[in-house]
Image 1 (cartoon, rainbow, N blue to C red):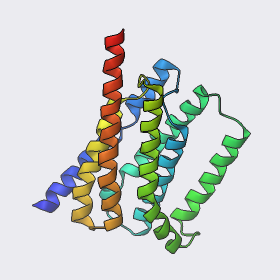
Image 2 (tube, helix red, strand yellow):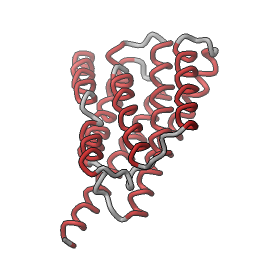
Image 3 (cartoon, rainbow, N blue to C red):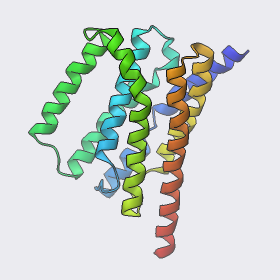
Image 4 (cartoon, helix red, strand yellow):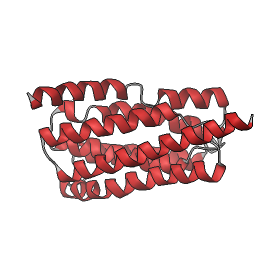
Amino acid sequence: MFQQLANFLSIITIGMCFVLKIPQILNLLCAKSADQISVVGLLLEVTSYTVMASYNFTNSYSLLSYLEYPVILVQEYILIFLVLKYLNKINTSSILISVLYIIISISLATQLIPKVILTILVSFCTPISFSSKILQLLTIFRAKNADTVSPITWFISAFTNLTRVFTIWMDSADVLLLGNFIISVILSSSIMLSAIYYRRNQVKQD
C-alpha cells in the first residue's frame, strides 16, 4: 500500500516538475528584467540538480524517484539564459563556463569521473541547495521587491520536495537524499512566503 502511494506521489511530483519553472520563466519574459533573481543562486541550483541526477542514475535507483531532475534541468537552462540575457551577462566567459559544465556533467554520468567523487559531491548538495535558496532570499530582501519572483514556482518546489521525502524514504531511505529534500522544503517555503509578502506590500503601496 505504502509503495503504491509512493509511486503515485512520484508520478504527481514528476508531472508538477514539468511546469515547475514555467511561471518563473513567464514572469521574466513579461517583466524583461531579472533584478530580483540571484544568478549565483541559479548556478548553485544547477550544480545541485546535476550532481543529484548523476548520483541517482549511477546508483541505478528507480527512474520514478529522480526523473524530475532532468526535467527541471532543461527548464533551469532556459531560466539561466533569460536571466543572463536580461542582465547583459552573455559573454565569452559565460559560454566557456557552459562548455566546461557540459563536459563535467557527461563525465559524472558516465563515471569518467570516479563514482567515489560523485558520492562525496552529493554530501555537498545539501549546503549547495541551502546556499542557493539563501542567496535568493537575500536578493529578495535587499531589493524589498519580488515582482519577477514567482510564488507558484516556489510552492511547486516546496510541495514536490515534500513528496520526495516520502518517496525516497520508501525507495531507498538514502539519508543524504532525505536530508537534502527536508531542507529544501523549508527554504522553498520561505522564498514563496517572502515573495507573497513583498508582492502584497507592493500592491498596497500602489
